[in-house]
Amino acid sequence: MGRILVVDDDEERILRPLLRQLGRIFGGEHITGVTSAAAALSYAENEHVDVVVTDIMMPDLDGYSFCRAFRSNPLNLGYIILLSGRDGGIAEGLRAGADVHFRKPYDIDDLAAQIEKGLEVTRNRLHAVQDPLTGLFLRRILDAVFSLEAAKLTRTPSPLSVILFDLDHFKTINDTFGHQVGDNVLRDAAERLRRHSRRSDLFARYGGEEFLLLLPGANEAKALEIAERLREAMVAQPFPEAGRVTASFGVATTRRHVKDLVHRADQALYAAKAAGRNRVMTAPPLAGDAP
Image (tube, rainbow, N blue to C red; front, side):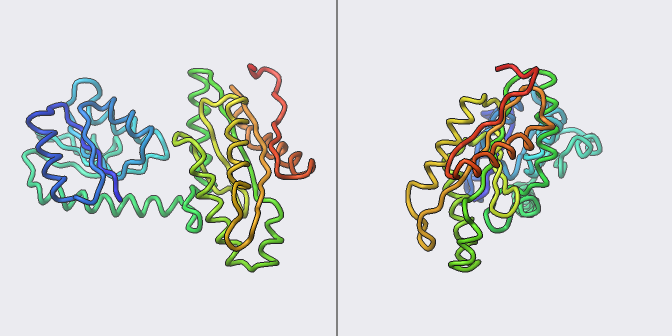
């Protein structure tokens, strides 16, 4: 089901009537309305948004500023439709990150058709960055996200943690039950682990049977708590075709050394494997990192 976000500060005359019209047309989609760009950005931090329909003229951030802020997060892949009551501004909107510009007054059927296109475009964008087996983000999107988080740390020091983990003895599962069962275990494990992670975290398939969870704002204690919860989720019940499957976890936390974060988590994961698997290990802090 797609998620459509409508942004307009005129709640009585524009926002509510438009939400009612779109509700009749897109009854099977999730449609939300907010009255400011700031509220829209806050919403997008907690929910995936497929299509944004936003006015340009708003009291806090205008539509152009909203587009730039929305696009600054590489995980915001939603299609943006800018609504404007004046001539011009098309080039500015497209440069800011909008996908299309609609002038008011608009025909609701034309707008609905554009939203339908936007839902399809966003699905294609997601497919390009998601692992087809598990639905998790692919490893290649991590570079953009790490750059974003590194920039945040230079402005406001705060903890950033990584949990790197993989399934124990996964080769044995493939050799014993076949690769189809192995794929089913990867798919089910990803879903099981995703249910026990935070919505604000980036969950990616890092390669093979290895997964990565990026936790903005999580200190070492919080990251260890989440990693242990994920470990317990794996052993809570057997997998239908392969029985009991465990996982090993490496945790690393920083307030400044983002470049080495994954490498340190990988070293901790290796230590967890060497210590007997099915456990969580943490990387020692680096000099200069606050506790």
